[in-house]
Image (spheres, rainbow, N blue to C red):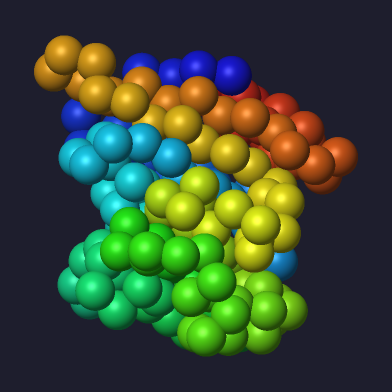
Length: 152
């Protein structure tokens, strides 16, 4: 499934839709070049929860945690990893065992240490707008994509 995201607001709106449909324990890989809109999409998820604080890419911290009511959102950015084994040092298995909505930017840098995601979102810059390709990677994810289409 492919979408055009013509504005920042479109990207944030897609994030809001993800918040509505994804179960409390979901893993989403966000792929794309710098500036493709990965963190903007996560900001859209957080804004949909009512969160009003700053949402920045966790490039230097590697992970940002947000507790929204009873739900937890984890936002990882693996851009600075030099070896996937570094994920073991930060306790990736413990993070993945939690019931959380988890977004991972630059997931390819964690290959071999990350579980399979439910959704894969490939974001790309296309001139003055962005595109996103959404791929279901689990049985449950097919229903997620159907729910997104119904909300269009």
